Image 1 (cartoon, rainbow, N blue to C red):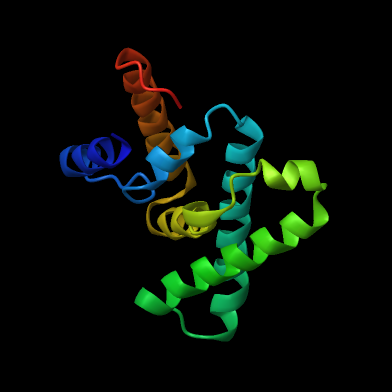
Image 2 (image 1 turned 180 degrees about the vertical axis):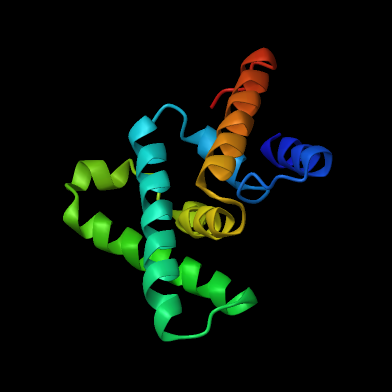
Length: 139
């Protein structure tokens, strides 16, 4: 559902909700608000590090910029995972597909800004979650 809503939203408004899979993935974490917060925090930190740090020492554009966002986000996640207590690390949602989500968010923040990215993604999380409740889908 998240992918369909993201695609429709992008086609209608022209605003990217941090990629097609991000709202659906974050909807799966709706009962773990700390996981969503951690994901958003890492994405902001990734954007700051790449935009104000890495891009000042090397030329980043296109695929190189995207790769830098993903790599920095993955490294930050591993660092945070080692710092946080084990219990919190296990519920952080930063496993499997979720490991690239902060990088996707950071890349979209760089393209269209923090407010637009977070508002559009938040709206689609709410819509996806609402439809899952209406359709009696367990999350």
